[in-house]
Image (cartoon, rainbow, N blue to C red; front, side, top):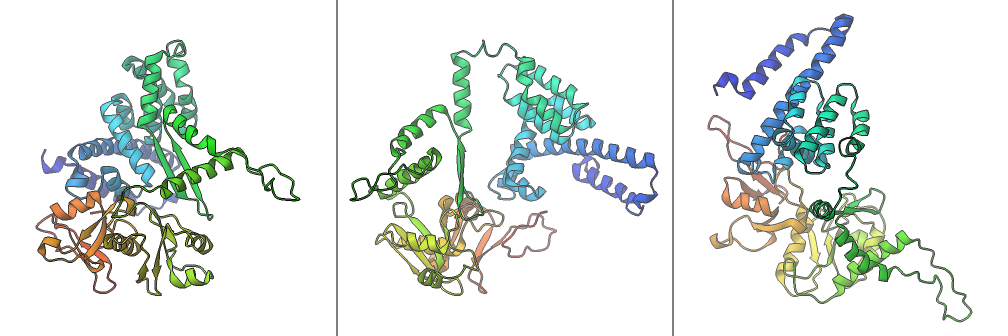
Length: 439
């Protein structure tokens, strides 16, 4: 492909041509120019989305995000490049792959402007949940493409929800054991569990999995959900009262009780030299007095959940909690230890300082990270906080097998990274902590 026909050159030329309109005030356009212009923009956006899908799939196939730019994945890189949410970035990569490899008719309609990128995503998702018959899926795709010419995305999504009834009316009769097995495999492949801060002092738990996994969870939780009297019935002068918790509250309490039992069980070391513990990082003055708010928001656990000072003080009464106390400037004053292993204490100090993977653009939590020696141990580097940085497994490999470099800043003692020079003509790169949107 010659330089003129490269995507960069063609798109740059199109951008230059569009600049002709920059000087014109919209009020000066005629009615027809306004309406036709907006319609033309939608067609152009579809063509750009189709081109983006093709380029994204090829980029992913070559694994350029990891090999050339040293991101953890294509979706991580594209999320950053396009300024998307992580969910949007992951969906963009999945939909691009579906359009290019499985839904060429939808890709063609996107390129011609007959469907928008939002409508194309709806079609991909709707067809993907149909039975795996290629003919049936092709028929479903065509039905939605026809509907997309007259419906907006909201109405198309409503139609998509009833797609199975249109293209596969006999599906109920044909759901035999093999179909059920396929659904179970799909449910298992799509399993996930997340525990996130709800922004209101609590956490939100969300997940899904196979029916088999659900049966295991219920078997473990239900024995712990029996209603308990609010007042001890054996206490003198007290009448037993019904448990005020509803079923959902009892299920949540059972899950916490089960997790606490796992932590209390004497197991072999499983992570960084010590069996799992609840580690909480907090300013020492707040832990001592229980008064005030942490200005740096550092009352948090290893996996990033933020806690109130009162909650930390309650947890600190438990011998299985490892408090990591910070001074006024964020320095580590003391690292509580539940074992004699120095590596466990260093790990707690490292997590307290770095919080998550420190590689620019990555925020994987400490449970997914390694301690990397800035100066390798075999080269005389010591195993101490001043020679360690927290990086995830993918970026740990990058630091060992690519030109990327890391150091601890003399100004504040925190990690900063030096990216490799991609082109000989580029200026020497600078040390960074955050990646620019465009590289």
